[in-house]
Image 1 (tube, rainbow, N blue to C red):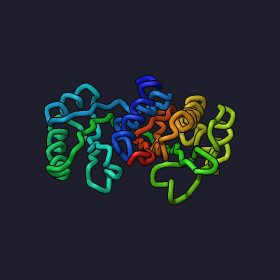
Image 2: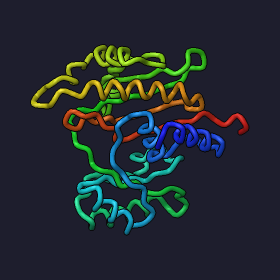
Image 3: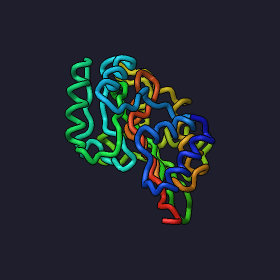
Image 4: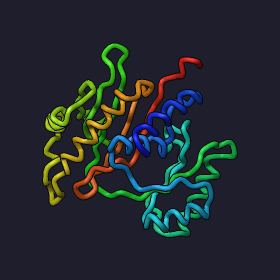
Length: 234
């Protein structure tokens, strides 16, 4: 997806009265701006899920995916570490049953990204000051440690590098305990990309990339959510 197509996706979704983009669309949108994302396939059937898993390679993650499904884990619509076609088939049937007959979305088969470091990039839009980009520790540590920093968008690469150095746990980005140094230029570009996406698309209220897992040395958005402003005609 190119940036122009990403902008049209947001405009179309707002016009349709959606409160958010689905995870699949959120990550496609973010990828258009340069955020590295997981390899994944959107599927409708058990057969398609098994075929997607074979193409991606095991293990995989299976998730419910819809624009109004904002809390997949809490809804019990995420299964991780699926290591065979049989496990994918069983998981698909189970998640479909949990989702219920009125579930309007589809299912996402996603590569399982492994890494010991979890970061996050986010954006919130203030009515007075505009979009503010957040960077810090992600995963379960987001609320526990609250190690995050903020900058108003748009951002330069220099701004992003400063944010990376200002979190209390900045050493986690270096070589530590046998882990490779994080690809900091790639991470800085991802932070800048979120700011640009927010500036380009004033109808976006929030962006949440959490976790951004460091796989080897590369940051990868494993989950992503784009929250939209209500339509003015709503």
